[in-house]
Image (tube, rainbow, N blue to C red; front, side, top):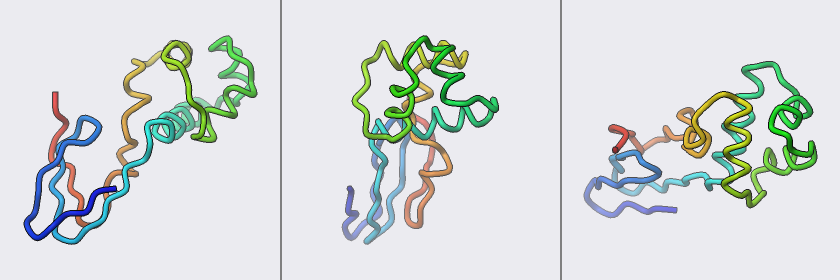
Length: 113
């Protein structure tokens, strides 16, 4: 949780540059929650079930349910298996979802390199 002071500030969070206005409190989702939200978005976009993702990623279905809860401490190998099953780059699954970033007083300026 960040609290901006009297002057607008620039801050980098999860690879994005933000302008934070005065007296704005900003909550950034945990990496586990970002992973859960992104995996959910990807399986919903494909019309897949948790069982289908589990089969494609060669993981037990209860593990997929744990991941989607946002409370699971996953290994990098798990992220890679899920990304491979979805046909995407693993790092994309760890970024904050765009629709969850924009809040009053918080403006994403650009992604950093």
